Length: 398
Image (cartoon, rainbow, N blue to C red; front, side, top):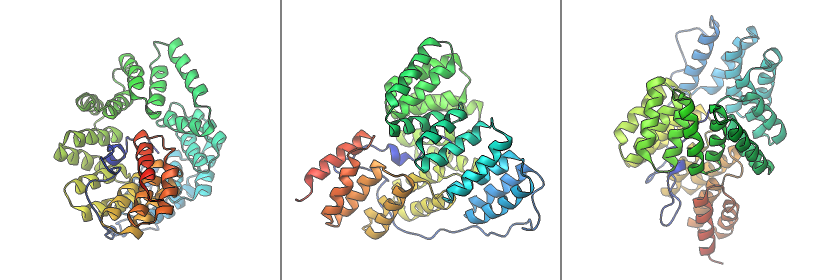
């Protein structure tokens, strides 16, 4: 649940006629799973928490999420006070959409480690998925300053309808603590996730002046400049982050995104591959590698990568976006509809997904269904999506 800029596709601009999602075209291919048999007998438990997590990640990376959960649950049952394996087990339950098991796992950790911020962050994510807004906000507040706390809180306050009040409090905090990098960084993150990058940059630059060696600040500021289209500035900041922390996964993915926007696909490909080596159990780098495949007109390779990403993380919203676009562009409409509808099940109310599902219906002449999806997309917090939905809604036959 760490914050990463996400798939390149999520940032692609509006095309002249239809909202861009992936690159050119695409189709369906089976996922190739790694051999599940490894050197270690399944009857032998790992000897330490680091090994338990590493083995589980390797199993997930091989496409065997259920097997990883089963093995890690056995280890955690025998080592009930080891935080890292238990937390990763909760993450895997979340990916499986077994929210009750994830909640139990995270709550068990907090009973013996009530101040563990990362676990509060994870539990907040579980509550947010269940639309338990108040409880989710409480957990994310407890998780501060964990990665992703403020972006998640921004979305939750939008949903609760009190964003302006909360934002005002953060602005006041930044104004009264001008030499506190955290206060500047916090409001900067919030403004970025409100899609106010010009304002966000002001606060994030202040945070960087106060904390010039913070990879977290460098990465967030770099990504914000990327939002603004200032690619060279973004690259410089993200490379500074990686000079401090060479295996920082979000920075690797975000720097790859920057090189994609610069048209340097070979460099981007290298960065995404490196990110995937660093964290083979995460989906973002695979999704962006799929984008590069699409850019090179290799839609079958792209689809394989999107399906691999979903095998790792069934909650990866961007993979559903890109996969659905590939299917739609190749007139595989039933598969496209299924991908977008599944995406909406993991990202309810997502304006981009509603819009893309609407275009899929419209291309088939299903005007009534398209109209319904376009109307839902009108409320998107992405201005280009809302604009495209309004335009295409008006163009539908009555």
